Image 1 (cartoon, chains in turn green, cyan):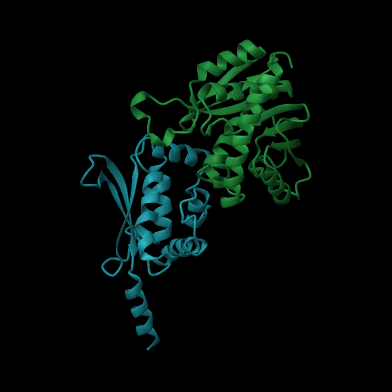
Image 2 (cartoon, helix red, strand yellow; image 1 turned 135 degrees about the horizontal axis):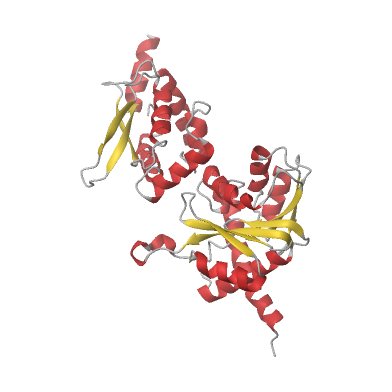
Length: 223
Length: 157
């Protein structure tokens, strides 16, 4: 008999393997650049960071897990925009090559560390993940949503104060096109309900930053 | 583009700009980026702004450098709004345009610098025969590589 845990592990293993193959190829081809992690440009990548980091209070020190950190672009953004803030950053990524690049790129930033793992090995004040749910490749929707749910569960479990993630917004029937193939799009309500019901967090949605997507900020009610 | 970017790639480069400044989602994104980062401002060069937006050849670094050199060369070109040079004219036009609440998309075009070497910005109007959409039009002066070489040879003599 398969237990819930073994089913979850099986689901994640298949998805992780797919993701690892896809992004290993991206970074091999485009290097430590936004294209290497599937963003159009630095500016649009950082516009997402602006939204995600609204979760955190920069006036007090905090620790941060960056799930699916890629080559660690968030470190560059934090250094540039919040240079005076006291942050203990851990970037977590599935792909060894990404983590190696991140370590090389940000070696001068002693407040930032990186690990090649499937999930965060530590509990932090906050966790963020940018764009990790967008490219579902050939995974069936139900399996991808299971992956999203399990990832959120893990982020919640390893965050003392809250977590933030972003999703591509579901398109109307008329505006669906070929470019959407292989992408995961969703409506905010589904994941708001999920976070409220499963984790008891209070949820805020940001969707007015010029992208066809939304950012979900989930805060623990009693951190 | 005077050989800075091979002729055959120039149309693709202009297309890239026009897609990123295009109607609906594209101009909405550009507006959000401008509001958040002030991408187009006197503090940044065009090379910096377009680099940040990855509006440049991406697969060939020689072409990318050539594009940036072309953008820099606009500092030595006049504009339709003297005494502003061509480079600053593009920046100020985009900055002003993206300060509006609902800016129309932007269309980048080119014209023969032998006839008019200014950077030209036109008020919003329909720029494409196949579309009713109005665009702010920014037209960049360009020279065919052969003409540019002939000019330089002539100068040496």
